[in-house]
Length: 299
Image (tube, rainbow, N blue to C red; front, side, top):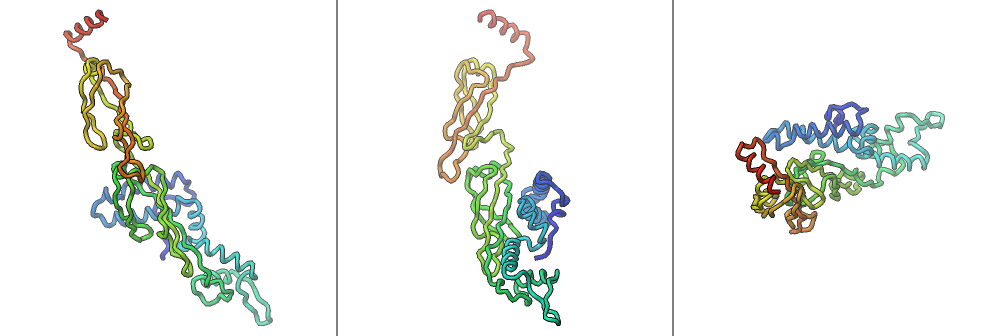
């Protein structure tokens, strides 16, 4: 695995804060997202690199391992565990001089690392110890429309394509674990896991609150006073609302089962709450103004 400078990929320096990393990732992810750059192979490659860089640097532990071990950061736990075991058994490999003495040098530490993966200098027997692979962490950006229905999607994690089903109704910030889709184990050990955090973008007129949705509907003064009908959009299509006479500004109606799908509960939905905003007429004609004055006298 060749070394990739994840800081350079995101355009940040090594002292960048978690907020700096998040901002840089989201900015670049939007710029190079496949939906924005259809059939652009270079943009697709860049998008994969950005996700890989964010996967490592946005996780405090992974970032520390990357800063110390570089391209071998995924095996940091194996390195540390084996190193501690070696220290208990007599520290590092001993090199004997011509007088029967041994020395501990910086080169011994390099030999230790190489022996972990089949090098020739290690005699302690630890190279056959199995270690579970590194867990991967990824963030997946989806629109609220994307998660209204369950669908399949292919993700690219560290150059590998993973096809999975995104359940309808996942929540912003929710993390799901996919077992066995992390890094390769060491010496035949089991693979790590993949943790996917969902970032849900909402550019609709609907505000999500758990499984419920909230929105507003403009109502002209005459319909509010006299009653009538109103056509309103929902995620499921248009609905016809009956407006009661004398409806007040801010009045709310609930449409049962017209909200958002409940996570992993097939066929179950939250409710949709619609708040009325009454439009007061402006630029009245002389006749209209006279009629309103007459109405005011009647009241």
